[in-house]
Amino acid sequence: MFTFEIKKIFIAFGITSSLMLSGCFAQSSTLENKVELKKNIDGAVIYPRENGKYNAYSINTQNIKNINNGRPATSNEIKAWDLDVMPDGTGLPEGQGLVEDGDELYSSQCAMCHGDFGSGGKGYPTLSGGQGSLKNQLLQAGDEPPVRTIGSYWPYASTLFWYVKSAMPFPHPKSLSNDEVYAITAYLLSINDITIDGVELDDEYVLDREKFLRIKMPNEDGFYPVSPERKDLKEQRVPLAQGTRCMKDCNAPKAVKIKNEITGFDPAISTVKDLPKTKDTSTSDTKNSAAAKNYEVSCSACHNNKVIGAPLFGDKDAWEEVMSKGISKVYENGLNGINAMPPKGGNIELSEKEFKDIVDYLINSSK
Image (cartoon, rainbow, N blue to C red; front, top):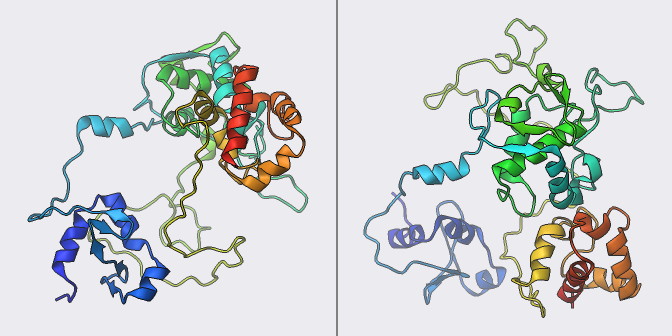
């Protein structure tokens, strides 16, 4: 039925799934100009396989007789990823955390992005405030838009615990223990003026699983399924949140083309699929040095993200401009804080020497 070579497809299946996908979609204009490359049935280029390589990737050169489509995940593998917490408490682990401990953890792990007391940072969301701003979202010209934060918008605290546990802190997700997540959650609830059974969450408040299950968020009733009785959904044949779930033999509606295509992206959307250029960021400090490790924990969230506006790791021009002030001034600004950057990048537990070592590591990375 197909005209492509079966052997090549079998070899491709021998590559690990992630490398196979990268190799299939990678393109090299130089190679295409030199060799008339074959195309797969999906249009992807079939690069020559030479010396155990498929383009830039190593391949499995063993004689594969049977294709193994994988195996069921083990219970431990599922457990490592199954971290979701439901509003009824399903998935919520045992543990406890003090608000005061959460304050310290937030300062060292979260404030660098989300600002002091959850006030927000450039490129990262505000976590506190905005209570009551969602009551009327039908805005008129000049009205202030609603502020969506933990306290004003999220209907269930389970979402907060789950998100912190599975995705935070930004540079090192899943690195927090259950007790640490309880502590940070307790602190975030406290700065949003959330009470539990009418009790305020002061510094000495200990949040555990039993108390957590009694939390009622201010906007819990702000999300609800749309009733079939609603008549204002003129464009919906079936009201939102209604209908029967379907996994196979579904009577899906006929697909339609986009009527109003969104254009004008800045920067423009790129369809280039070339392999990324490698950059030598080797310095006198190794990746295992104390400065490099402290940088990853305390500084990488901002200095690896161009949206924030901080000089990027390895950006020669940016760091030349910073260094024009002199190293003493750079140290002083970093230790005391400047613009959106808090003192010591938000990690006040760093000693002055440790922080200066991080600055030196960043500067050396740009040379």
